[in-house]
Length: 310
Image (cartoon, rainbow, N blue to C red; front, side):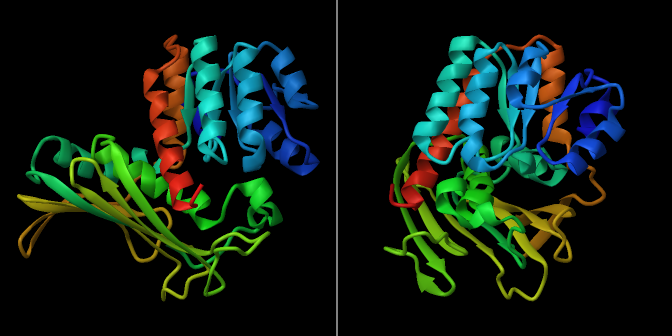
């Protein structure tokens, strides 16, 4: 919200939060805004757009209610816990002809954009493989993340969604032929363990055109640093990678590879944290309506379902 306010693209008319302390903090940023007691009361204020940052189990239904009321939506990831939920939201956005965006924030880092630009420009030749990782030395601090009914899954739903999105986004959303996933909880295979979510996962995505992507993500991993985050793409003419710097969750660099040589493409600092929300606000202020690229959200959710064996 601070990023949207600082961009000066729109007015924050109302906020809704069940926690008094969080609502008070929000109103410090926008002291002229109304505090609405619920989503329905917020929508009754006839706002043009709604930012949804609630537990994952609420995202789909709340997004649909907002869209059907005539409001554009910017939702935290994941948009839904399953492909079916995401499909319902995208269909609602199309029916309402309203802008729908999701906070897939790593797309908006300078480092990731530099990598994608080189891939799409052909600087790597034919890109045939990708390796993506997101290992977090910590786990979520809210209990609902560990309840599969509320979260839809563990580290794959929380972190892997970014990896799947980046792989498909950079590689041009190729048709997926096969997905194989391995999920672990506390060091043991998750298969058949009711009421648990995975804290370590690997997956391999095979595309119909023969290309491949490998993914790995985790919570509470003893990786020797706070975070290991990276997306590397390999082509017949070179490679390119986005990687975090010094275990940081926020600082990234990008490099272009030719054999044993490396060429820097981007480096910190880069204030990217609210950039996805600002992009949505800019597009909303410009009068944009439903974007057919929202269908790509369904593609990402379909891969996540297949990692989970759904």
